[in-house]
Image (cartoon, rainbow, N blue to C red; front, side, top):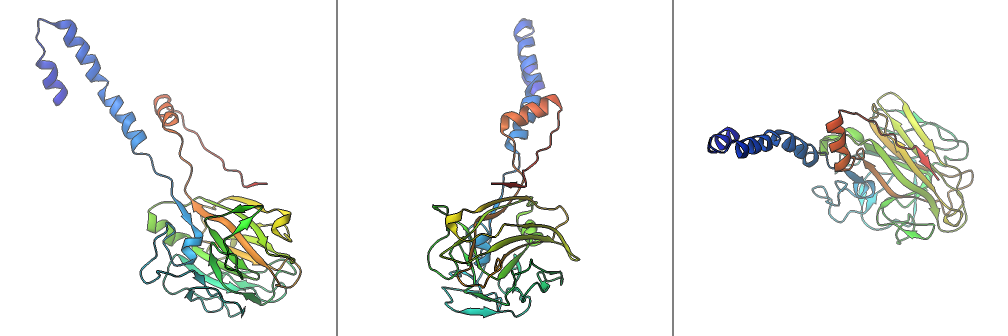
Length: 296
């Protein structure tokens, strides 16, 4: 409506100017459409899983009643503060009061026995030598389990991550996270390794639904941070309801099994640069982007 009024206000004695303005205004819808395409693109969302295990929303904000919490006791499921310099023992799958973003925690049963890993009752049997029926300390926010310091792997100090002493695990509720942010978390990423002295660990990332484990990633046995770590980059199965992080004993006892997932995060799909969006919109070309499942 505005464009038609503006064109009519141009004197009929100036057809060249009127035509020029008309051509310019005829392009306004295209310019606006491309502008909205760029400006209205979805912002990437990255959820810090270390923050979630401390009762946060994944973006650094504690959920109501959880201020000051630093992790979860895998034996009781309670949110805790500080360090527990003691052993904890297998006590079944435990829900976590105070947060719906964590589905629950558990300690692996002894030698290769199936352990319940989510509230739907799905079980998983780890590799031989990874279940001990016990763990130490708790599931921690960006802290080495069993020690007060931050996560450090390969000389890098991390500002985020999840610490899990063997042989325990934590399961996150993907539906609750997706609903909270009205989005779809499509990718998991972390650097997995071990801190502090001798002893082996093995890391697990499990995707499950209400019936079974539908995807898994199992690391090599890692003896210490000095021997390096594994970068884990995974697509989240579209039908997954839960993602579980778990640390096994790696074939020996749980002594010094300080497993850590540095920068453990769930995130949405990467968004093309604005210039790419414009070109795709103009050419009518669609593209799919494939994420590598694992890098070293």
